[in-house]
Image 1 (cartoon, helix red, strand yellow):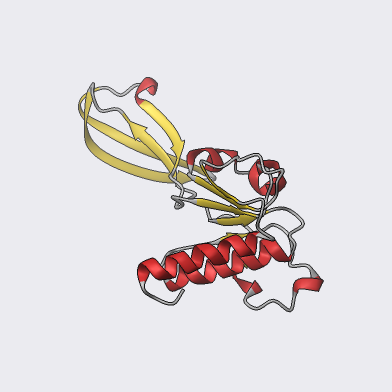
Image 2: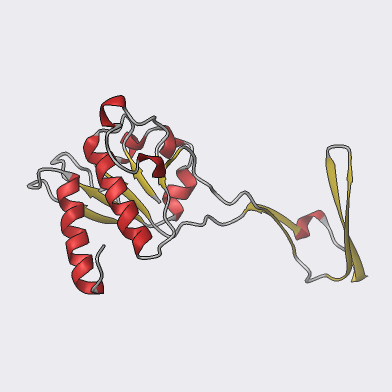
Length: 183
C-alpha cells in the first residue's frame, strides 16, 4: 500500500506513481491511495489514474466458535428480513455465548509505504480512519524532510536529498541492479 500526505504535491504524487509502476512491473500487487483529488497543476503527470480513493480492506467478518465443549454436527443459515441467523447444531455437548468470538478479516497488505510525509498525522484522514491497519502492518517511511519524526518501522529518510523522488529513484536504481530487470 502506497500513501502520501494530505494535499499532495508533485513530490508525493510523482514518487508514488514511480514506485507504483516499478512494483507493478515486478508483478507485486500494489495500491496507491489518496483521498485527495489530483491537483489541477499536477494533472499533466502520466498515470495519475493509478490513484485510488479508498483502501480496499478485506470486509470479511469472522465468527469463531470454540468447539472444546461441543462437536459440530451441522451448520445452516437463513436470512429473515435484515437479519442473518447462523445455526450450529452440536453432535454432542452444548455451545454457549462464551464460545463465540467476532473479528474483522485480515488486511491484504503486508507493507505500507509512506511517501513524503514528515509525520504520520500528515497522512490525515486516511490514517485516522485506518489506525488499526497502520499499527498492524509494517510501515516503511520514505522522506527527505529534516523534521521527519521517523514514525515507520523502517525509515528511509535522507534530509540531504532534494526530494522524496530522489530517494525513490536511488531505491529503484538499487532494485534494478539486484533483480537485473528494468524497473
